[in-house]
Structure formats: C-alpha cells, structure tokens
Amino acid sequence: MSDDTAVALDGAGLPLIHARGLTKRFGAFIAVDAVDFDVQKGESFGFLGPNGAGKTTAMRMIGGVSPVSEGTLRVLGLDPATHGPQIRARLGVVPQQDSLDTELTVRENLVIYGRYFGLPRDECKRRADELLEFVQLSERANDQVDPLSGGMKRRLTIARSLINEPDLMLLDEPTTGLDPQARHLLWDRLYRLKQKGTTLVLTTHYMDEAEQLCDRLVVMDKAKIVAEGSPRALIAQHSTKEVTELRFPVGIQETLDGKLDGLAERIEWLPDRVLLYANDGEAVSVAVHERGLRPETTMVRRSTLEDVFLRLTGRTLIE
Amino acid sequence: MTAVARILEHRALQYRRTFRASLFGSFLSPVMFLAAMGIGLGGYVDTTGNAAFGGLTYLQFLAPGLLAATVMQSAAFESTFPVMGGLHWTRTFHGMYATPMSPLQIALGNLAWIAIRMTMVATVFTFVVVLFGAASSPLVILAIPAAVLTAMAFAAPIAAFAATQRTVNKFNAIFRFGITPLFILSGTFFPIASLPAAIQPLAWLSPLWHGVSLTRGLALGTIGDAPLLALAHVGVLSVLALGGIWAAARTFEARLVRG
Image 1 (tube, rainbow over the protein chains, first blue to last red):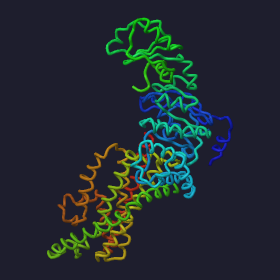
Image 2 (cartoon, chains in turn brown, orange; image 1 turned 135 degrees about the vertical axis):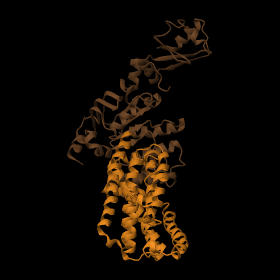
Image 3 (spheres, each protein chain N blue to C red; image 1 turned 30 degrees about the vertical axis):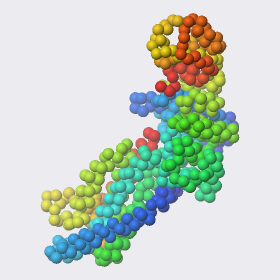
Image 4 (tube, each protein chain N blue to C red; image 1 turned 60 degrees about the horizontal axis):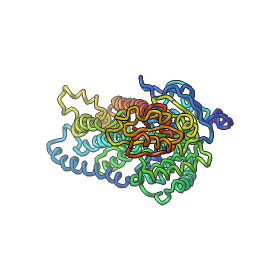
C-alpha cells in the first residue's frame, strides 16, 4: 500500500467520497453533469432517480472503472485516475448486472474472487464460508450458480463483494427485478451491514428502498442532482405530510378541470389518478365528497420520496 | 505477473470440470485425422509416387502440418466465444475489473490461458504424431512451441477483435472466410507448389503457412536447411502475436471502461 493510501484511510473526518463538479461525457452526451457530493464514513448514501439519470455512471466513476471527464473525485482520499487499483482493492461492488461465474460453484465463486484481491487461499475459504452463512446460502455452497433464483444470485454477489472486507460498498440497483420477498431478505442483510458500520452507497429507483436504507440521499434527474438530504428532511421540505390519491372512472378525470381547486396545497395530475397534497388527507377526502365528486377509490397516505421526485421533476420515478 | 497467475488459477478451476473430455478430444481428433487421411488416404497417394512430397510418405507430410492447422482452429475458437462470454454473457471480466486487476492484466491473463490450453492441445497432438511414426527428427519436440506461437498469432488478434463485438454474428465470418480456407489452403494437405504459380505468393500472407512450414521443418528435421526462412516464419508469427496482444489490451480496456 502506498503512503498516500495510508494517510487517506487514517485521516479522520475526511469524507470517503468527495466529488466536486463531477462530470462524465460520452461524446456529446453528458451522463453526469457537474455534481457535488460527499459521503462520510459509516454513512448510508443513496442516488435516487429514474433510469438514465446518471446514477450508474456516477457509481462507475466512484468504482474506479470509468474515467472522470471533468471535475474532482476522491475515493478513500485517492484519485481514481491515478490509483484505480488501490481504490478497487478497498471497495465492495455489487453491479447492476450479475457477473458471477456460472462455470463455478457458489463457494468457488467467492474463493476465486478473494484471490483477485491477493488473499491467501485458506483465508478465502474461511471468509467464503462465513459470508455464505451471512447471506444464508450455506446449503447451496457446492451447487452450480445457474439454477439459483435471482434473489440468491444477488445475495451471492453481495457475499462476493464482501470477500475483501471493503471500507466502502457500492450497490447499483441491488434489488431491481426481484420479487418482494427476495427484496426484503436482501434489505435485511444490507441493514445488518449498515448496523455494523459499513459505509453503503447505493443507487435505486425504488423510493421504498431509499427510505429503508439511506441515511442521506441525492435525487438525480437528467444528469444533475436536484435535491439532497435525509429521506425525512426531503419529504418535509418538498412535500406535505399526507397525500390523498383519487382515482376516477375512465373519462371522468378529464372533466374535472377546476373542480378540485383550493382543496389542497398542491395538485398533481397523473394519467391514471389525481394526487392532492395537504397535511390532513382525511379532511381533503371529506371535502372532495362534499363537492359532489365521486372518485372510484380514495386513498390517504403519507408522503414518500416518490412525491418529492414528482415535485422536483414533474415526473414519476418508474414510468 | 501475479495478476496473470490469478486469472490462470481461475481459468484452471473452470477447466477442471471439463478437462478429461477436453484432453480426450485433443487426443481423439489427431488419431482419427491421421488414421483416415494419413494412412487411409495416404495409402492411395503414396502409390502414385511421392515426388511432390519430397520423398516423404503422405502421413509424414500431413501430420506436422495438421498439428499447426488444428491448434489454429482451437485458438480461433478459444479467442472468440469465451471472450464474448466474459465481456457480455456472464460478465466475469467485468467482475475481475471490479478488483485491483487492470484491463491490460485481464487481457494478458486470458491470452496466457489460451497459450496454456494450446500447449496442451499441441503436446497431445505431437505425442500422437510420434506414436504414428510420422516424426523423423527429435526436433519434433520443438514443434510444440512452434504450434503454440502459430496459435497465438491467431488468438491474440482474434481476441482483440472479439472484444469489440456485441454479438457473435461476425464470428461465423471469421471461421467461414478466414479459418476454414486457411486450414485447407496453407500447405497443410498438399504442398503450396501444387497451387497455380500466380497464387503461390499469397501463401506468404497466410499466417498458417508460416506455422505449417515451421512445424513440418521441425518434425522432419529439415528446418536447418533454410535457417533464415525459418527465422522469417518465426518473425511473421511473432509480429502477429505481439501486435494482437497490444490490440487486445486496448480493445479489452475500451470495452471494460464502457461497462
């Protein structure tokens, strides 16, 4: 390990990730546009945004596998342009697409991955067994990878990313495409890592995932950061306490022009429903009925990050 | 170096599952080819007089050439589909890139594995050549490295190309318009001198012809008759192999960086 690596890791209070004006261009296309953020040790930090917002590109730059076009980026105090391998040695990466070796068994995948970090074979085996226990795959240790379910493969990928005992974990859409049960199992494992003090950086377009796992997040849209804060603070700042969702019979919504005015602080018209933002959702739904309107369904719920995103961008997260 | 060794360890672990069948195939293929063509077909060829083969039996002529041609074919296979697999199907090369490994090391490690595999194939083949009594010089042992050099003159440039592809569509063209014609026309089955005089110089453009000339010269012990020519063969193959390694380092990096 070089001297500056040691300094960077010992330097208390230095952020693990420091980005200023971070930009990535592919030809004329700007994937990440001058974003600023810091991630502190022990923090759980998220990039929330729709597909194509630039989250994955940002993650790949942090991961030291995609060169920065412009701006400053320091990961573990090091510059990825000059210290890519040293940075990658201290990272645990869960990529969006699985990169498991389908010609090896579950356990062999972990052992061989540890070897790439220069760990002795016995140590790799010891850690592999421990990690399989952690992700609840011990019983599948000697099975081939291919027949595993999507959720199991993700858990194996998480185990693999932990084989080098990383200082920083990067998770790119860790639960996309999984069924709800598999997602909850995965969240539980990630939550345990968070409790142990592991620094997590994740991207997601699921607001519930961001709310569950992130201490702090940035909302990304069209290559830029449009808001930053804790999930609760973002909701408090950009939305009301409650939301009343009205769903009208087909064709009716288009005839409501003006009829909902004044019922809420803010009204969002989505193709299939109307959202009324107010701190007392029940009062809103009563007022709607008092105006003689008869929505097919009425639902009062708390504001979520989805509402924050809608407010900030005028669009929903999953289109 | 240790980085390359780690990839070799990985590839060897993958290979462990299939190596029995694979080695048996490497053994069976030359046995069948040499029995059918060398002895079977060769029986007829030899009765018509063997002046064209410089007084050799057809088996003696064919066997070392077939060694070079066979490793070329295996090398082309090993440098196409597995590269596509590592970069696009299983994405294991991207997994390696998330560790301290660099794209250059990933390219070198995988090419080194192909070289090892080709050494196995060439060794088994050479063993069969000797078994058939088709080698007339102890120099035949050097036909193994000559065959591996031939293999890498194909594997490295083809791997470099494979890394630029998103689908296997163009691989078919490599085999159909590259590997198969070379297999047949590079002096493996008949001397280049039997081709029309006008196209004989084209043989110089065939990397396989250089490889066949080397393995044949070594198996028959005639390599010393034209040492400068032999050196030229080694030179051509080395340039292709080294150029291919340089290109592969670049195309692997471009692909891995793009994600």
